[in-house]
Amino acid sequence: MATKITMPRLSDTMTEGTVATWLKKVGDKISEGDILAEIETDKATMEFESFNSGTLLYIGIPEGETAAVDSLLAIIGKEGEDISGLISGTIELDAQQKVEAKEEITTEKLPTSNSQLPANVIVVTMPRLSDTMTEGTLATWLKKVGDEVKEGDILAEIETDKATMEFESFNAGTLLFIGINEGQSAPVDSVLAIIGPAGTDITGIAENYKKGGSAPALDAAATSKSEVSPTSSNSQLPASNSSDRIFASPLAKQIAASKGINLSQVKGTGENGRITKIDVENFTSSASVSTPVTQPQTINNEPQTTTAKPFVPAGETLTEVVKNSQMRKTIAIRLSESIFTAPHFYLTIEVAMDEAMKSRAAINTIPDTKVSFNDMVIKACAMALKRHPKVNTQWSADAIIINHHVNIGVAVAVEDGLVVPVLKFTDQMSLTQIGGNVKDLAGKAKSKKLQPAEMEGSTFTVSNLGMFGIQSFTSIINQPNSAILSVGAIEEKPVVRNGQIVVGNTMTLTLACDHRTVDGATGAQFLQTLRQYLENPVTMLA
Image 1: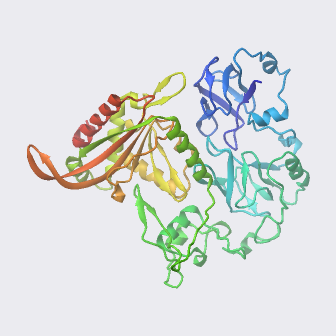
Image 2: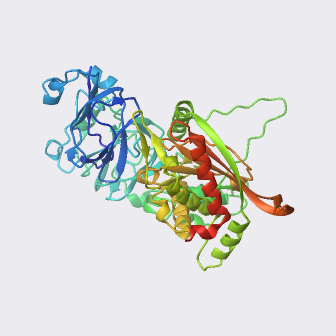
Image 3: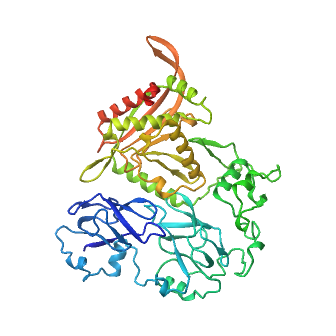
């Protein structure tokens, strides 16, 4: 039976969306996971994928038009199926079919208009913080029941399939109810919290959500681990409580970990005693309070701290079970889909980096300028992609999409896995602009402030492990891209130049290609152009 697809709510504040681009047309075959359209929300333009397979029978919102959330967007079903009743609204799917279609519909809905809720009461639901997010995990509550909330205050840290992000309040009032405990996962649109005037009775509201099958309604008083009553003054809250929970910003936690600082010894000056970056930087630690850590490593110029391993007596076994994060689950799913659906092939080339090293040294003599070799590789890739657009493509069942804009994704390792922030219109950036943007995005990734829009729209990806001394490696394509470049370390070794053996500096690059869109000769020509730019950096400045 045909399935109705409605305008999704892609952000917590979204009430309507605009169809920017349809990537499918009526009559096209649709597979689960295919991108149907690009939808412009109040925060970003996101790709919207299909959760169903079949034939696209009907488009309800043309390109450029705006419609309210839950408006009829499309209908997918069997070719030739009569859908006139669905279009006119005289036929509705039953509840079970709606569940099977993965539409976020419940048989009982909580009233959402302000006229049906107590005055000034706002229901906050689990937001969809990325285009692929279906559920989120509540990592940390930064507010508790009874706290006053201002517009812009950080309510909680939410772990999505891509990153752990701070979630701020768009409303002011008192936090009356918490629907999801720390560590608990819940689907998008589950009740997260209720905000309103202090003392408002919200019992019936919470019960309606409970009946509707969303996140379980929790006892409002019990949701606060510190057992502080709603009438307690914020000024009486300590930086840590009896449950040893430490209120600290993600960046403060990162800095503390890299410096070996025990956050329980740091006094927070932020809201409700929250520890901030400045608090950690100003903290003077002693050996007695430092937490032992190993020397930080770096990935793409970002620190990676590893903790000391537990002591295992000889002859004994020791295992550790680490719960998979939402990010780790998604990485597993996406990379498995990529390697098993896209026929990968690999091309490797060696590049002389002597001239690049001279050029970089000269550029970095300019005050307040710092360009890395990775920045030079990204710039060269952007220029080479403009000359070889068939590498800058993506596959669909009916056509190959050639992107004439260049958005390069840069793989950045974070604590829970890997994220790929995107440099939009990279070919239009200078080397210094690329360097500044990469540093900014990598910093946001580490401090968990990377926004969904900053991880979307890549057309090509660069992954660099050269800083670890890795000579060469292969990567799995970051779909829907058709290629990813793996960058190895620069090595000093004997090379043959003009018939003479001399000492030279070389770097190995490996291009992974999707053979559905990129042929061997196409990939080889791209690498030849890339090598020309890197071996003659002045050509990148022309």
